[in-house]
Length: 465
Image 1 (cartoon, one colour):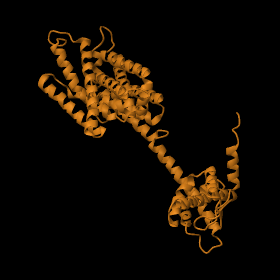
Image 2: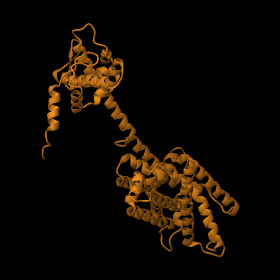
Image 3: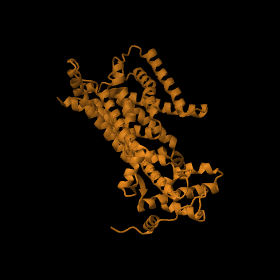
Image 4: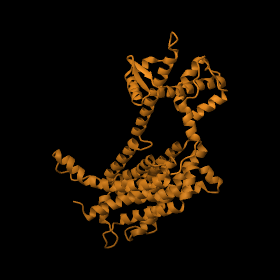
């Protein structure tokens, strides 16, 4: 049963995820997604150093009350570590003349190892729960509330970070967009791309530290990348992409918590494991984010794998249909000769795909059955003439401008002929001074009624609605 505690748990996870999405979107667009993963580890020495400094200053310790002051101290250490990561990465890349990923790998591992060494030397007695660090303890955030209210401290912290990130996004949207897509243009206009980059790194560091305490490393790294990438697959407009990423991250937290409560009981209960009651909300939220990305990767309207496969299949079938028209035209053209010409592969018509193409052409009225085979209709002959005209004019164009043997012209023209529209074919014909024969000595068809109608339609002004 869903309770108020579940609502606060889910809301905290959603706020943390949405806060990570804002800087994560620009990291994805800048092709620096792994920088978020690196920052999630390189902030460790900054946090340890901030903790030790606070301890020596008496902010935390046996006779002090850390309170909210300690949160700001840790965030400050994270900011310093994040800026140091960005600075060292650029320095190693520039001075060492290595690629960005290699420089990031050196800095990432070095700073993380330094953080572990500092923990070992100065904070060895501190207990670190590996499960808590990896998977988070978002279900227990309701135990630490603000005053006497029911509002979790983690929800206030992550909500504040989200508000600050959104305010920075609103104030610096133009600068972020320009430095992300064209840093050279931004520099020429007087914008400091390096400063914007450091501000983004500092924002990312603060966001990561705030989210780590409640949702853990796995969910932070997931929501930093997966929702922005899924949104990128669904939209090419920046503001729409950011909005979609926020919606995906927030809704994934609610769905993930629901699945964490009900899926284990439904799955393991049917298998006889009655002791399994729930699972990790952070881990299930990460799974939901991954599933959303997988769906966007497969079914995105423009970049989806399924959509691209279908589009390519339809394009291939269209080309096959046009090839069949070209074969039938050339066979008619060569009917008075003893052979069908060197480029007429009539065996295509006998294959299964060729028969399907001819059946499709017959439904369109371009071919008709004749003597156990297929023959062009009047409209089919017009389409075939345009296709062959494009093919032979392109062969003539290549023969004039490129030093290629005649037997190399056909294959290139066969690829291009399916994508030449009527105005471009007319320009080719004018540039070649209206040749009558192609390089192989075959007649080039003239303009058909279909070409004239298409040209007139293109020249006519659009009609008012």
